[in-house]
Length: 376
Ligand code: V47
Ligand code: SF4
Image 1 (tube, rainbow, N blue to C red):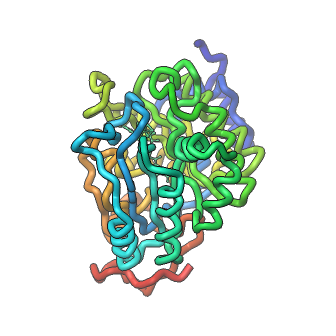
Image 2 (image 1 turned 45 degrees about the horizontal axis):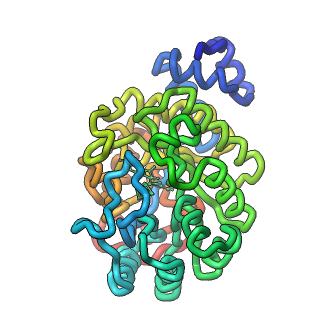
């Protein structure tokens, strides 16, 4: 598809705070030179978030990797009878949450597979037991694909299910499961799971219930730039209606151990281009995240000058990207996160999941001891 835009038309629009069109987005992806793209994205990034770069102290929990679906980009899932498959016990889950609390974490990021046999109550119980034992941990749990599955399991509307989980301690929704919305791609990479309309509807319902959420886009596989711009515009339209999204996270496809292992991982140039175009198209998203686990530390640092203002958190126990070949560490200490942000000339700010600034005892992260409880 040929674009009818040009940089001499796009720059004045951005200077005036005007919205970019589909054609503008396509031009930026396919023709703009990288440094101009970076300059423009940085302008918007600094207009929205100044020189700050946000991080949090978090941990990941994947309660099961057994999954009924077979998305062809996924190296994390396991078959029901596979030796790789696992289901965590309540004790293991609570041990992880206790470890997170002792490390001073403010957030648990919980996503997993859709197990062939586990009932709805098992997933609800994960949130309930953690929240009851550790009410200070914010639980950012389950993707729209999982909420859609819970609805299939129970024949209940997703809105009621979200409300029940909110009562049990759910704090917000992560952005996963979005992949690429366009059916030309979605039908090939994950045809059975929740479609684009379901993903959008579930996030709308969450926002209407007062739950904030994130959004993602999986790039660097079989999609093209028109599919990516279409994806970003669908997210922008929902955000216009609800204002419930906090952060957009572009996710680069990692091919190892997947059915698409013949595809080469996206280049650093593509990572930076995607970050910048996302920042420019999503004019109503407050934050863009350079997820260091997915990008690697060096590219994540560069991304802070290409539109990103958030770097995710300490993480710990990451499986989805490590199963698919990521060579990032699984954990960074707060001192390391702050250092990598400061090296880029930005000011690190610890945030909680809802972007409130977190205060710690002064320089607590330098001591190397576990962080004390946070004051938000
Ligand atoms: O939905 C799976 C992606 C997502 C691969 O909300 C892959 O703060 C690349 O959504 N290569 C889950 N990507 C992770 C996710 C996320 C991560 C960090 C922060 C937040 C947040 C959300 O991971 C899945 C899928 O799009 N994924 N396999 C792969 N081989
Ligand atoms: Fe299952 Fe999620 Fe992997 Fe798809 S991406 S196979 S739904 S775990």
